[in-house]
Length: 97
Image 1 (cartoon, rainbow, N blue to C red):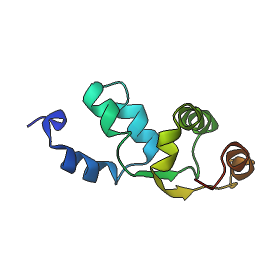
Image 2: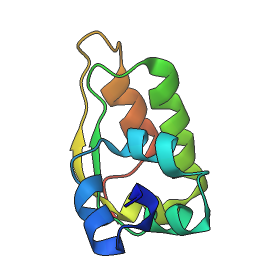
Image 3: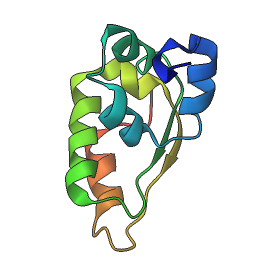
Image 4: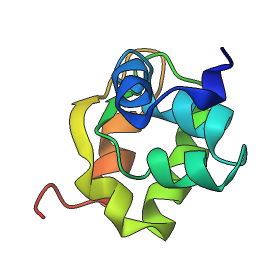
């Protein structure tokens, strides 16, 4: 069986084991079904030790699509080796809904 033919419920479970930027990078442009699925799943964001370019790219994705922000249920930020990541993220987004 091909991965893309798995039921949505199983795909949602798989996505929970992946970091949200990786999910978007891998599945966003695959097809319309995955485009919609990744915007309808809970997002786990671990930005610690992430390259600045990927961090900035995913921040732009969130800015362009406010519904994605509502799906974030886990967020990890770090200034360890990422120089000012926490301050930058908080300057872009309010922690309120």
